[in-house]
Image (cartoon, rainbow, N blue to C red; front, top):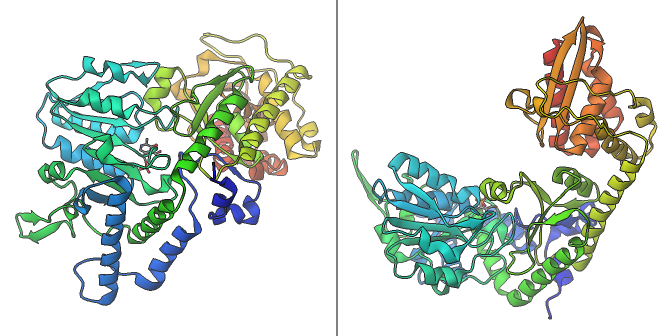
Length: 556
Ligand code: PLP
């Protein structure tokens, strides 16, 4: 293999900044980094060629127009389209999928069916739901096991009313790929339109829409080293010709009268208003950049990183790998039986390792797989084996701290109020705020807070919507009552660090009279402990949301 990740990485100035020298960036499925040539192309556009396209008689406008149409040609080659009439610029994959849902569904009759899968990103689910609701269409789903579509059973749900099949080329949450040749074979012979959400595919494979055989293909440039704010829709010309535009405005018309308009031809009919011109310039340079790379070598390297991640994580006790090495889109996803994914991600962030936690905009898939959130590490070609080793070592270190914390002084609450109609305040007597303050390093304070989580019992009775505190990154519930002027509180959360922070909050305000509870004092301790700087912004906001709810409940 000749491809060198180290050499490739040098194209990306973000990694050369002093603050990012130690960064391990494993959030590539969300957004990839941008090479210098793309950044320069965007800046260059504003320096030398900024003007609106079409309709103008001056040289800058001509130059901008020529650039946009050249990039359209580059994009057509990038995707294997037959002509530039088949390429539509959008703001991103989400807009592309909305465009297709809107335009395709406007041609359907009530009772017609759209076939999706449980594995779709919300961007390929919600637009179809909106159309189905307003037009009386039916959404059907490919049979699945634990959320993973079983395409070999697609025949069970295809019917003579199926008009559109819109599926992802692979899961952005769990990493599995769709077997596209098999899907093509299964769909052949049906009179329907096939939309492929290729958002996660375009960075890993050299896309050839003709070989894939889909009618429409959608992707976002920021997922393949391009800029944000620009995406592509490929549509087979004969299909696009049949479709009405989805947004009205300038650029998409041939002529306009007061009561009706004549629309422009392909592809401009689908591009109302001013496009993201600087991003289109960046996209063109990005496509040239990719054309100069060893795409096969990149893909092999990415695959070897995915194998290394699975090999490193699989033996860790309690770690539940939800992704598999084979047929994978560069995504590793897992949970751990003893910690919330968000706690681990926060720890990794402290080690300058960027990953993502949550449902990854694929709630139906995660729900079907039996999880609310996973930790996702996603690779790009600039990631190195050292990145993977640091990531796996940091996960192991975090878990070994959990083991050590479980062995030390703070006793875990043994009596859990499971299913009780009422709640009791937790015993906070072992929490020593002064001792927490005296810990020298942030890491020590963090570990202490994690160990404090164990005084917070699980309280089924309080886990409901009315006790939920909005603004917390992970679910957190807070309850209160007043006993002869003394305010009592209890909290619960799935996240250990949220429980730890909640324990800190309660250590400062529980059992006090309203006059003795001070917002300024709590925030003062929070700042003094350095939590403000060390926790993510959303975590700090979550702490403040808990505090504000507590003050509101106490009328303090
Ligand atoms: N489809 C898939 C499979 C994705 O992973 C994403 C983003 O993560 C999208 C669609 C939406 O892309 P964008 O946010 O760029 O519009």
